[in-house]
Length: 304
Image (cartoon, rainbow, N blue to C red; front, side, top):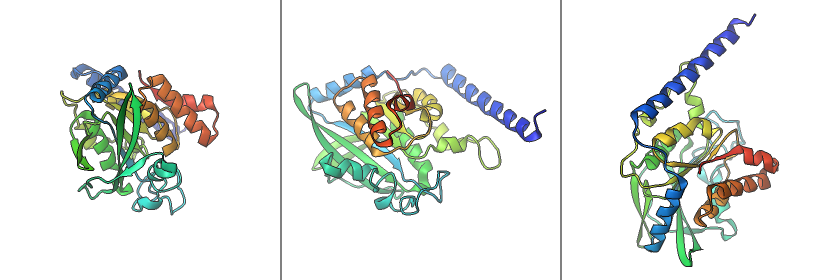
């Protein structure tokens, strides 16, 4: 006979499953939108290139934080969510800022800063690609969010993805359309949605603000990436509801480090297929994690 604790865990799991199923059915029944296919994103990019416009990505990075996040503890120096310069996901060796600017992979570009105090640092990276015979600039706007405000980082990612927060950033006297107008929206960090599905007192919870974010009808075609543990399980339904292309998600726990981001960005800029971008992510992850290429391929989910 199972003990009381086992029975309680089974009931809790069934309750969680039923609630998720109900939310998904509600979304499918009440919404008239459908997920944007990747081909539509590529069409939009090619049209913008023909008009002389740059490709733009906007990435929210929730700094790793031993104190304020339920993460596997890392050394204090790289696990301080209030110090981006040393943080695991930003200033450390494989953090986004350090890795992408190392060996001139991407060029740091002066740009207007953000007024949001929860964003401890904003950088804009630039790389030029030749696409269809045209030199095309690719700007990556990356925000380092205070690890204590990880909720806000995820909510901003959601607002960008759903079309609610277009931003205009001035870069070298040029206005670049970021936020909801970007071609690629990304989130990097701890998957806080895992925490919200079961709180300390075993009460089912959700992020209230996240559930109040709805897609805008004029939301331009865009892709999203979520490099966080099990993001396919926890983010995909929401991304489909927001009518965006869930280009790269994850199927299990992982290290959301910048070598994977770099591989995805380069393939995305070169107009690779979703399958090719998936392969680029897997190859990069295996190169640094030494997990075996088959395991790396299984780790990442991609949407056509």
